[in-house]
Length: 137
Image (cartoon, rainbow, N blue to C red):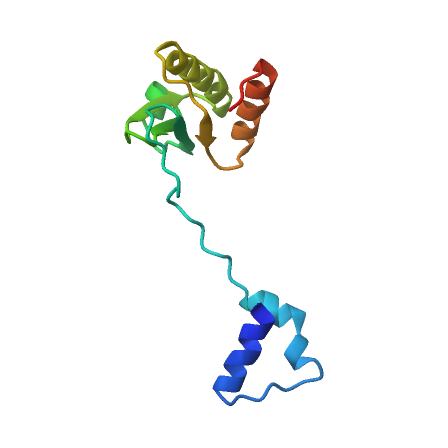
């Protein structure tokens, strides 16, 4: 599609491409390429509390971060938009914290079926632990 758009734009603007391989210059096409937009909203939004949670972790830049933790873990329930914050000393603490969180939700009758997250290393570690426990999340 990038090549077709480039050639279509040149045609509409009455531009002439010059050079031996001007119409098929792969480097030019890659340079002009743009990543597709990602959909931030779920098309099938969960209606059951606890069914789908979204997680993200970020670094806390603060002089007092040693007191509360250097990393901030945010958990959001998609159905209710309820949020939980956890302050962690290291990213490795994310796995036991989330496993306990998921266990607590299951005990109160709101089992987690889906977790939405990025492909960061700590999330892959979480997936590995959930698979090891036999969870179908």
